[in-house]
Image 1 (cartoon, rainbow, N blue to C red):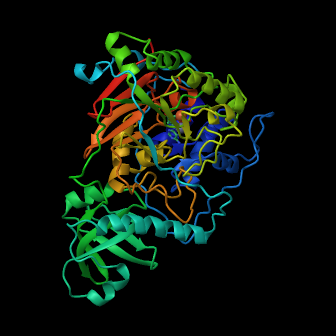
Image 2 (image 1 turned 90 degrees about the vertical axis):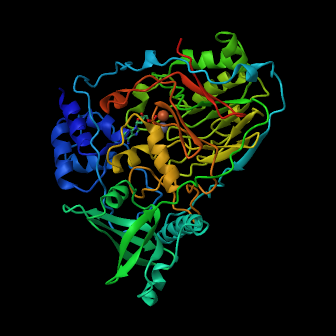
Length: 542
Ligand code: D5M
Ligand code: FE
Ligand code: ZN
């Protein structure tokens, strides 16, 4: 096993998220294993390994000739007054037979067969119909926000207020009391208290404690999780830091002894939206135009499909009825996203990448409505929510009338069926904070987002969050369909009636993914029937 492989393995086994830039630079240092070992011993509480960590550890940097980019100033200020978060680490299993090369690992790729669920009667001659497309949420992103401590406090207050409202509207919560009013309620028996998890600890005797805070009145309380209540302790181990929860319990010596802990969650009963006609929507993500690993054939096949020219009779009919296409971010590979990125690029000009992408979209019939949100490779700021891709970088896309460039995240309605689009950059952070979640099941992680009613609950890890005065990452409006991307692994599922899908990719495995044993599933596209919510999956690789 190479030194580099050992170094990455060491980090990943310790539950550390390895940043792509840091990975690229690690390839070029003389002693990668020494650097990662000293990182682990010097920073036992860190959950990610970044370019800056590496630069701080390399005394005489790097192999001669490598350019170290100037560090860009972070727009997000982290408050030192916020307590250090306890994080539970997950080890990701690495396949020892892999070595770090550019050869893609395509073990999964060929086995994915088509799954066809739309019924025969729904594919009878609905070739043209009026599309019904509305934008429900497309957060206006403030330019030039400063990211001061005050902003951060307002941001958390907004998160707390929005999620508290969800609890307040529930009927199953007894005797709701604010943390600041607990002092006066000493003998009142059972109380329910809403708070944001500032700290969690679990001890060797099986018990634990949470510190929850109310950022509006700036008060905290300690919640005791009794060791005899294994079910409750296990439930709390699964809850992410900075999630807003409701604790039901009773006061004892200024602590709250928990009987139950509730997440905002999705209600069991709710009205879902269905289209009146069997219009279909296709979900794609992570096209990565411009990357050497971008694979043209499945995207080309998809374009033929939507023109009714691909596959057997049934698939052709499905293509003709697919009038909406959602792109969940990373449509291009971008430029300068990580160190030495240009070495992985076939096209190193961002405008040209968007222009190539728009050439594909030009071949889609004009009545098909296309939504594009950005991801971490697109030419917008990294901090979430990410603003829509700007005309100046992608004029060719902006001029197309059927293309809707929206923010990440956004919510749209297709014949009243609501779709939440989010790139899911937060998935690796969540994966690393919840024990036992596998790294190839993005849908399982998206379920945790729905339970927490937040797209990126964990503050201060790898996912950059813009601490604006409103938290746009709260899932305040429950979607019918929740689309994500980023992991390059197609997945489908449901949580309490919400259809969840992760859209995979059109890019072969990269060296970075190979080092993490992430096996992508390129070329798979989910196509949902808006009348029935049935999901079809077509493999466009052939
Ligand atoms: O992300 C591409 C792939 O890399 C995808 O499979 C997720 C994985 N990835 C990205 N960042 C991380 C971190 N920080 N830890 C673990 N896995 C990660 P892309 O956005 O296309 O570069
Ligand atoms: Fe991607
Ligand atoms: Zn991504």
